[in-house]
Amino acid sequence: MAVSNTLANSRGKKLPFSVAIQTDGYKRLIQNTLSDPKRAARFVTAITSAVSANPALQDCDAGTILSAGLLGEGLNLSPSPQLGQYYLVPFNDSRNRRKTAQFQLGYKGYIQLAIRSGQYKKLNVLPIKNGELVRFDPLNEEIEVQLIQDARQREETETTGYYAMFEYTNGFRKSIYWSREKMESHAKKYSKGYAAGKGYTFWEKDFDAMACKTMLRQLISKWGIMSIEMERAITNDMTVQHDDGTTEYVENLEYTESEPVPTAPAETIQEPETQETDFSDVLGG
Image (tube, rainbow, N blue to C red; front, side, top):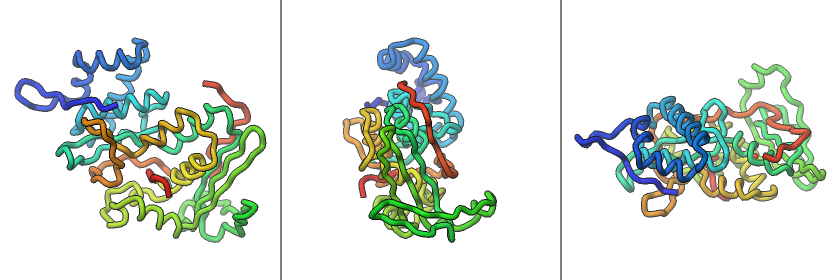
């Protein structure tokens, strides 16, 4: 859903998002999209808070912020940076000569969407540190590791690979392991900014966090059970919608200087024993 456009006052100055979102046009759009007045009010509060927490979003086109926010709301995910389910990411849209906001799914958003499907008993992703990997058998998908027990020492140790796995409630398991070198190649292939060493990409800000998200995406999109919500989230992750209805993968554009970056997960992220019925920024590869 593309929402246009930047609102301005009578002097041509762009309105702050907290003011723009209260204008009649945007209020009608939110009410028509969400229907429930209480839900609409909660959405306005949450999205306004998320924008105020990131100064770089203040300069973004209000319509693109609302588009990204409504996409996240449609997936029943929170824009709170603390929860890490999805992020509103500012970047420079040279095509339209403006700053816009883009929807980025966080690794915790993947987990939430998976849990809601009711199909996953376990879901895990973690960086493997230097010296921890004993062996990985890709044929039988068996891994043997000896984790560094001291948390601080482990955090400071160089990452040499990444492991991700899931187990369905029916007992089916799938796991993958990528070396750091393979992840580097993947990042360079799908992120022009990272390949060029621009210094502004998520990969450069927190490589492990983006690598863990990539592992989840690779694992679930290729072998996992995909709910309609999950398919929609993956399709829209790291893309921006232009006013003409076209979409563009955001890694081909230019980020602003201050992007939120999700913290890399620790050991087990989620191992739900019961399910609720209410879960690298890279494409393919």
